Amino acid sequence: MAVPVLRWCGPGRHWAVACLNHGSYHGRGTQTGSRSSGKRGQSSLAQQSLVTAQKPRKGEHDWAAVVGLEIHAQISSNSKLFSGSQVLFAAPPNSLVSFFDASLPGTLPVLNRRCVEAAVMTGLALNCHINKKSLFDRKHYFYADLPAGYQITQQRLPIAVNGSLAYSLCVGKQQTQVINKTVRIKQIQLEQDSGKSLHDDRRSETLIDLNRAGVGLLEVVLEPDLSCGEEAATAVRELQLILQALGTSQANMAEGQLRVDANISVHHPGEPLGVRTEVKNLNSARFLARAIDYEIQRQINELENGGEIVNETRSFDYKLGCTVPMRDKEGKQDYRFIPEPNLPPLLLYDSASLPAGADPQQVINIDQIREQLPELPSVTRKKLVQEYGMLLEHSITLLNEVGLLEFFQNVIKETRAEPKKVTSWVLNIFLGFLKQQNLAVSESPVTPSALAELLNLLDRKAISSAAAKQVFEELWRTEGKSPTQIVAEKRLELLQDRAALEQLCRATLEENPQVVMDMKKGNPRAINKLIGLVRKATLSRADPTVIKEILEKELSS
Image (cartoon, one colour):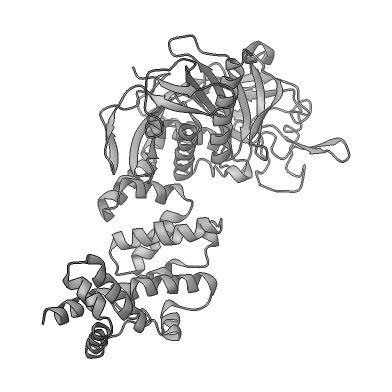
């Protein structure tokens, strides 16, 4: 079994992951041969291109990193898990709180059917075994934003277990090598969210907002099969796409609808696992990757300097780029789990076990939910590759960027240009401009219709590629104008008068006898210089292919 190891060359120096096996993979495509088995200590192939495994030199130590994730996804539901209170982001503080949410005496939980169906659907999409009988437990801890002093969760017998999440890593300098990996899912459980503590440092006060208290969560617990920040961030992004495709969670990390806790440890290969730390409440994939990689390096540095790792909970300070201690890590005994006395076992059925004459509104049929599963991201990517002939890494990018696939498909509907040309423009030009200005697809000043019109002009050779890029830049700067208007205003259309172009080419040859001589001597750059001179004379309005054809004809005559 291959082991990912981290090379550490003493205090103050960086670490990197090396892999002690060499699976082969295509330069543009999917890895062949070795594939992640989903076992602890698996090979971190994402880093193979960074460091080549070699024998340790004196003073070097091999380290293996182990990363497990607990992901909390807010269920898309109009009401909370055990009460009828509305779920709404950014509502006025404490305006969506029922008596049960505030834990007033005598109130009882009523289970939300929608949340149960969302949990079953998510479990099926993640290849889990759905337990026909699951139980609720009380998990005790005492925070100001948890009025009851406990959280209702599913510790002993969760709703779904033993699943898997497949994801793809793009690696290499140009991100053109795709490696398929899998992480095991230990369980998926239903639980309540807590309220929110708002700290006012200026007044030294903490204010409590209970709007979030009792909102339904799916906790997805991944086995510690990951080994670096990049793997963790990619797995979380894939889960986010699946949840959004299912409609079980909006999974908007910016609004706190998807939060991640990372458990991290390091050890020498072949030795027992190290003491782990937990980094809490990571709310973006980028911060997740940075926090994990920093914490791995911090632990290695601590151990190399003779220190020891404390089993503690830490937070990530994104401004400083480091993790900081929060508190000692609680153990199961600290939570004092007990069965929830006010909720009976949750019973689910399949078509074979469904009681005769059962009211469909009173039971949940697992097979019926399985039939309602929508197309998952992995299937969508395969369809994009098959339908449009695009590379797998391009299909991954289209899905990973929010709104980009819909933008691409809208352009395809309105243009006659080849799909490969559309793919190139969307991923290279359009996405490049978005990232340059840190904009989302929804904030783009260029609409799918405008890009489609521009590509149509390019497709029928009304403008050159260089002119098309000028038009795009103008579209980005100036809203309200169409590509056709911009082409007319700036006189960017290609010259259609071949006779005039031939005359211009002859004049260029006469004015540059030395370049002509170089070309006849076999200098391949000479023809390009001549093409450039002709294009300059036409203000880039002549097609380079036509210019080259005319020049070669004139020189051979």
